[in-house]
Amino acid sequence: MTEYKANVKAIIALILGILSVLCCCAWYVGLLVGIAAVVLGILGYRDDNPRQKDAAIAGIVTGAVGVALSISVAVIAIFFSTRMDPQTPSSTVMMICSML
Image 1 (cartoon, rainbow, N blue to C red):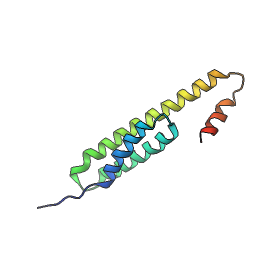
Image 2: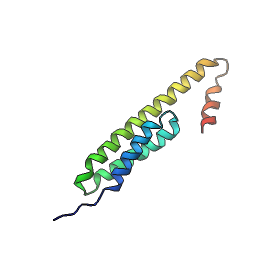
Image 3: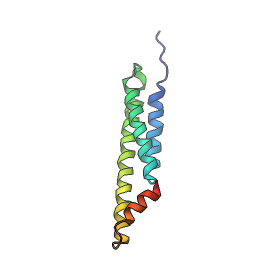
Image 4: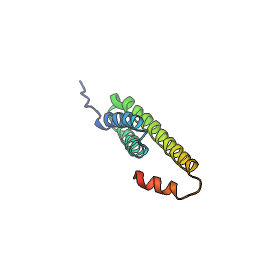
């Protein structure tokens, strides 16, 4: 009887993907965690364990959704920051630097 081990990369990818969706309001955190989820999901999918491929796919999907939401939040934040103060175009650059 073949005994399979848990695919740790796939499980961590799923957890990070869920965290990236939850942390998308802080777009820089959601972006980094989402990218890590996608990378670990791909690595987990390439492993030889057939029982955890669904967790790897779910990690890739949730990570990609988290990245998309984080980028959307960043674009909306930049859009509204330029609408608030149209006299100073450098306010967008200052806002991005202050978030980092």
